[in-house]
Image 1 (cartoon, rainbow, N blue to C red):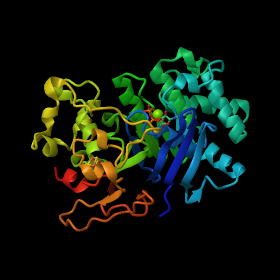
Image 2 (image 1 turned 60 degrees about the horizontal axis):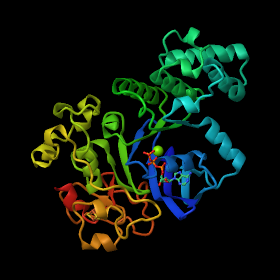
Image 3 (image 1 turned 120 degrees about the horizontal axis):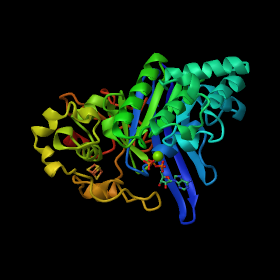
Length: 378
Ligand SMILES: Nc1ncnc2c1ncn2[C@@H]1O[C@H](COP(=O)(O)OP(=O)(O)OP(=O)(O)O)[C@@H](O)[C@H]1O
Ligand code: SF4
Ligand SMILES: [Mg+2]
C-alpha cells in the first residue's frame, strides 16, 4: 500500500557564519491515512526543520535540502514541478504551529480569514464562504461562533486561538496535517482539550497526522507510532505501546524517565497516560527510583550543536550505556525484533540510515543503538 507520506533519508543544511550546519542528517519517517505519527525529541533535534522541508516552507537560504525524498502518495514533492507541488501543498497538506497569534493575521477578523480560504481556493461567494467559516468555527467548538467570527485573533484566549488555527488547517479538508507543538503554549487542561479535538478531527476526516512534540505525556494516547529524533536523526521508531513498555534506545529511555508521574506529584503528564504500559517494565526493575522525591530524572548534559557533532554515536557523551565502540562507530538504524529469537537481528544498512518502509523490523521497530538488544531487555 502506498503511504500517505513517506520521508526518506531527508537531509537539510544551514549555511551559518560558523560553517555548514547539518540540522537534519538523514531522517526517514512515514504516516498512513487516518494514523498519527508523533515525532519526539529535545529542542534543536530537527523536528521543525524536517517538517518545514516536507511542507516546502524551509527558510531558504540559509536552509537547503541536500538529499532525500518526500513522497506524498508515492510522488516525490522534491522533484516535481513547482506548480504541481504548490497545488498539493496548498490543498492536500496543512500545518498547525505553536504560536497561533503570529500565524494568524492580526488585522483581519477570524471569520474573514477563514472565509477567504473558501473564496480563494473553492471559488465560493462571500456569503457562502462566511457561512462555511462559522460552521467550521462551530465544529472546532468556538462558543457563539456566529458572533465571534467578527472578532480579531487577539480577542481570543490561547486555547480558542489554537482552535481557530486548527479550523484554518482543516478548511480545505487536507489529507495530511503536520502539527508542530500545537499545544505547548497552553496550560495543561486546555492542552488536553485541543489535543482531543485534533484527534477527533483526524478520525472523522481520516487524515494522516504528524504530531511534533517534546512532551511524551501528550502523545501517549493519541499517537499510533512514535519516531524519536536526536541531533538531526531518527534514533528509534516504534508503535507507541511498544516504545513505552520497552524502549530500544537509551535516549528514549532517558526521555521516558523524564516524564513526570502524576502519582509522584508531576503536573505535566497528561492524565497520567504518559505512564501507561510501563508499570511492569520499569517498576519491577527498579529504574523508577530515578524519580527522587518527585524530582525528575533528566538526561545529563545538553544535545550537540549541528556544527560540533560528536564522533561515532552522537548520543555517546550523554549515554549511560556508552562503550568504546560508541565513540568510534556510528550505529546504523537497526531493525528491532522483540520476539524470543536473538539472531533475528538485521541491519538496515549503515549507508542509508533509512529503515522505515524499507528495512523496518518485523515488529515495525528500529533503533540507532549498537546495544539496542541489551536496552530492550534491560
Ligand atoms: N534559519 C535557521 N538558520 C540556521 N540554523 C537553523 C535555522 N532554523 C533551524 N536551525 C537549526 O537547525 C537545528 C534544528 O532546529 P529545529 O527548529 O528543527 O529544532 P526542533 O527539534 O524543532 O526544536 P524545538 O523543540 O526547540 O522546536 C537547530 O540546531 C537550529 O539551530
Ligand atoms: S550506540 Fe552507544 S552511545 Fe549510542 S545510544 Fe547506543 S549505547 Fe549509547
Ligand atoms: Mg521546533
